[in-house]
Length: 187
Image (cartoon, rainbow, N blue to C red):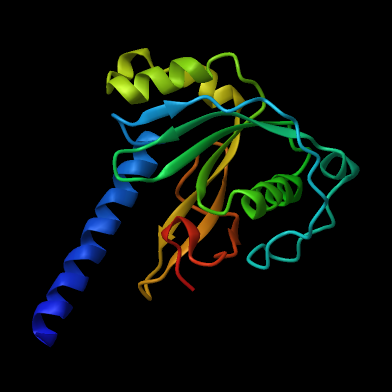
């Protein structure tokens, strides 16, 4: 039975890696359900930047006063939860990391898309839900996506939350803590 368990775990890891690659490439899975979330601004407390960032400077005053609201939620068929969050445009990379960390502490199971505007979020969700990416507002997203978070599969087999700047998903700028295994992260 040990051999079968090992094979099953390896298969699950491969499927997790494949799912993560597909999800990060498309910004979110197609065919999910959209849940509108009431737009209630929250005032997150300023927090230090992630340990993964190299010698982070203290967040600027803009972050300490930054507000954010969840504009929409998208749940993929595989259960992953995506939040489209409207934030003030971060003045610095450290501000982006701090805001992402604040939101992550309140929503530890969600992949975050941090945008500085919300006009085209319904179009983003419609394209993702239908699978027809021809209507995806790519140029608008390029202009307004400040950053995102995603779950990364590490070489040691652990899954950790990472912060990315802009549309890039190649180099994380920070890691966020795994909070009680929420969102399928592992420590």
